[in-house]
Image: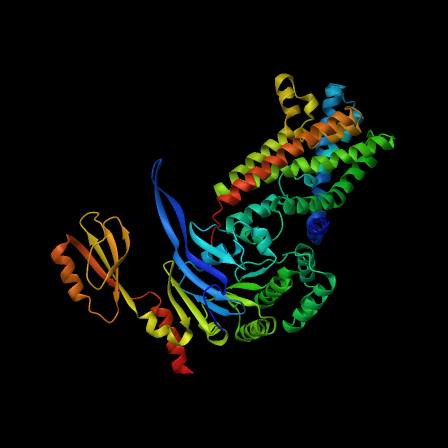
Length: 266
Length: 326
């Protein structure tokens, strides 16, 4: 119970830290809205040409766009999660402070990232989504159960997203400068999460592959639950399996990293 | 005061060493491996309630020692205990009993008000509510933090932040505090405040303090005992007053031989280090190097040599210069 309160405090801190930067949040909201507008016009043109592409009708495709904009910063698909700070701390040796604390490194950063994600969802995600829902024909289910399943899938997506980014961040223990890895992860994440185009649209073997990769848990899985394109239970199980696998891998890598740790500087 | 009887040690180091392996690129795909002995067979004991200065030039191995004492680094050799705990193996358990201030880093939450970092410490160290409130009130009063609690840490001045960090390290009533350069970059007034506070904590709570610093005034005003580390070795351990004599105790003769040889044998000097054809010999500072060199030149294929004065001499000289002024 004591540990729970600690990580709750860390998560609350993560939330409040991001809440401090109001101008950055406002700028983010604006950016997400503009990107949403650009993508929506592209998608509408595409779906006019090819109706029911990927199994979506046009309203569903538009909904997909605005959910993507809501999730972009929430799930830090294009970067910007706690991994930036963690990598910097590893590079400068500040991670030494995190290591002598009576707290688990992974749970600490997971809590901080969940706090951040919750703020980003409310602060940066909600406004573009509501804007999109008001200004465009969107598909929103009336079924409360489906919304509940959707929210559950969003939480699982947060876990998977952190799981991927934590692995990326830990690479800094070996590489010291992880800029290259971050950029690769960013590119892969953008492409494989369906941020550019829904994964349902990806053709043939490529589609088969991207749909089972962990990134499909981020945007595609919760969105398909909301749009009624996927069965909630197996989808959430798929996400949970990736979350467990990635967080487990993170633990292994973390113990390898702390065992060989040579804290830089100082 | 330093009652350092055997077995009485609260902090115990026995022949502790730490070797880092440094890989360096020497050419395309070629890498050179080199071992760096950051800490070389250090032994000391610190009794409960002692306040000890731990000094030495940059890169001497001070921070490496502190990191081993917190459990962040695992010693390559030797035995190390803090409050009966092996730090590297039981880092979590030890964490509740130690407080650490790294002067050049902060444990505080950068973007959030100071008080948030303390609330976090409350949860992290599971401090009982009443004790947390009492400790916080006292620390806020002693370190004059009252007006700063609601200020985001990033807006604090260096001195304010340092006081904030020291409070964070002491909230959970640690038995021992490691302070790594706690006065670095502070102005005279802030330094005096920090020192006064540390003295109070040490006398009132009996907190054991290990203080690393470049500022010899810190040592003069706070510590009855000082340890000097240089090139990873403990070169002095005793009262501050005796430091001067000890510092000039040994000089080093560095000899380059034609080829790699086993340690040379010379009367009244001992080989302290061998690296390829280069060897380091320590000999009493009072003694002339000339007979030593003659002896070596007659028996070994000598290429080059140089005599090095003790590296901490600069430190000692500065200390004496300050004393002469005051």
